[in-house]
Amino acid sequence: MEEEQIFQVALTRVPTIGYVHAKVLLNHFGTAAAIFAASSRQLQAIEGIGENRARNIRQFSAFSDCKKIVEKSIDKGIRLIGYGSPDYPETLKDCYDPPSLLYSTGTGSLNLPKSVAIIGTRNHTDYGRQVTEKLVKGLATQNICIISGMAYGIDGLAHRIALESGTLTIGVLAHGLDHIYPAAHTGMAKDMVRQGGALVTEFPIGTKAERHHFPIRNRIVAGISKAVIIIETGIKGGSMITAGMANSYNIPVFAIPGRLTDKFSIGCNQMIRNNKAIPYTNVDEFLEEMQWQNQVPAPNKATQLNLLPELDPPSTLLVHLLGKHAVLPLDQLYILSGLEAGTAAKAVLDLELSGIIKLLPGRRYTLS
Image 1: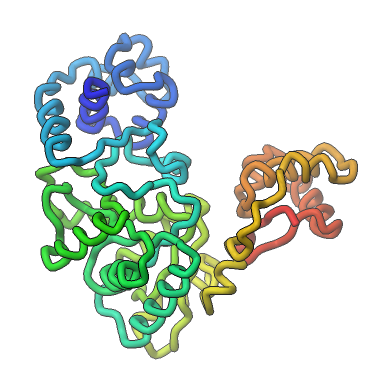
Image 2 (image 1 turned 180 degrees about the vertical axis):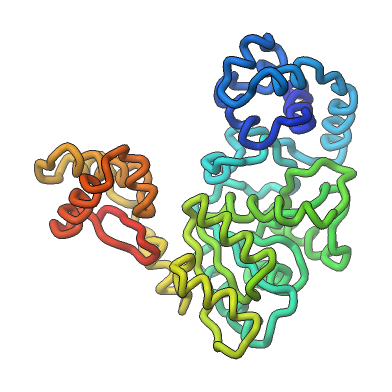
């Protein structure tokens, strides 16, 4: 296992091998060790790798440095979670640009069935504070894990209220796990781990909190969550970046509506207006939107599909896609089906009129 971890670290350090390339390589070869054992010809045969990237993999030699990172991490009680590991977050794995390796402390699972990222401005208003408190306390009653980025403002507030409410909370860091930034949150971070949560990052120990790390960190915040809720944000900033990433990953985004005169509500109101976010009003409606309000296990999808009336091939294909993915945005449903736009649109309309599928906010569909 330690040998594979060394190769996993090495893969993150090969020049010109980015997140997308690493995912393609791992999906093809299965392990990082197999990637480095492959011939140049085998590597070049992979779409998008080419001669230059294949050469960089074959010529990589800094394995001793990678071994030190693994050993120091293990000594500090840090888990290395590689892409493809059972502990790797499934929702993040489905993203097009997932990190090939995560570092984590704490016993909290990164694969919880109900987890929500709560993020927002560092300079929240009293309104933002009140909404965050009520939201987190409401989610805590349903044992929903709270995820955020450990920053000042809404992030830290969400983590603290989760701790006070007794629910798990996961912090995603923009630096190595050998320190906490901001330092004022060090005690809170220890409490999060002590209470059964976790801290996670893609940056190895010794990595400082550089400015350009935070947008990179934000895609993990979005990617390990089942939904993202934006409390307050201006027209620019980390929250808007995270929301955009969540949209691209087909992860539901919710935003708190605010007054038109409040500068930290401008971003939320714009996302709602542009159908990039669903308006958040209260916990019950959020749970209903996420289909989390009923704790009774859902009927077996295979049984449901077998009970459907006889459908034409396009409609059958769309129903099976929704049976597999539960909820899909309309454009993603079209893409996955491979149908012509007119054919897909007619099938969606027929299924909706028949009551077999239903439209959710954000132009998303699910089986009825």
